[in-house]
Length: 77
Image (cartoon, rainbow, N blue to C red; front, side, top):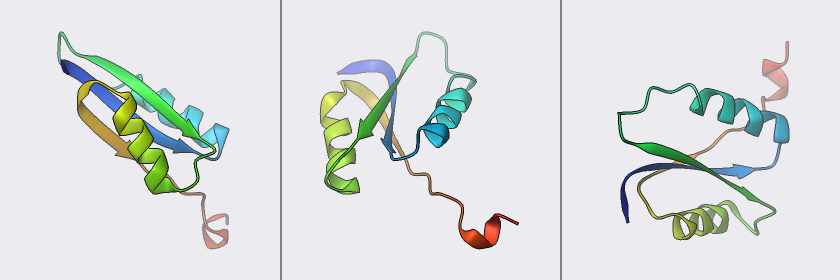
């Protein structure tokens, strides 16, 4: 286990939203000596399966599962 790694696990179904997530992750202020890893899970059978795959694939001590949703029709103006 990497005690100084933070993994961001993202179930991707929209590349534009994923790129925006990565944009903001890359601008976070991370404690000195720590590293980040962005794990994109695509084409999973379910969200649960996707996040479990991401958790298993990372040796980071800190794992953050990000969930984003497409805007609903009422939010599109």
